[in-house]
Amino acid sequence: MSQQYHVEGRSHATRWPRVRDLPRCASCADPMVAPEASALRADGKVSYLWSCDCCGQSFVTNATNVA
Image 1 (cartoon, rainbow, N blue to C red):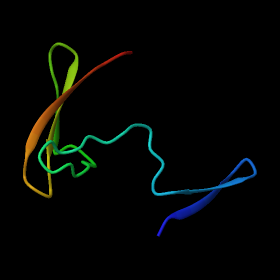
Image 2: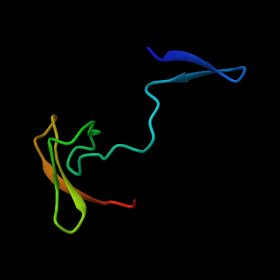
Image 3: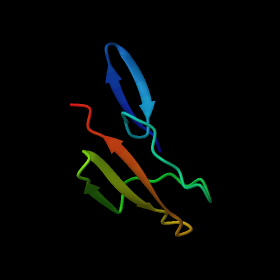
Image 4: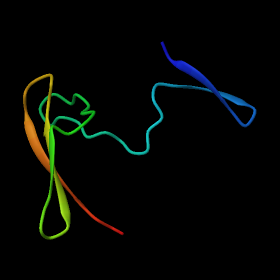
């Protein structure tokens, strides 16, 4: 069941507010909620290891520090 919340005079139905889209498994399209591990690399990038709870597929994503 969706939760209801009230913002500036309007009622909105939502699951969970989110800032970005979650990555999805390339094999089964199941959404990934959190990475299994992360590592800060010497070049300033962060690598994230994702592992699908549904089918077991694993993959790595990289993020660059923009600060």
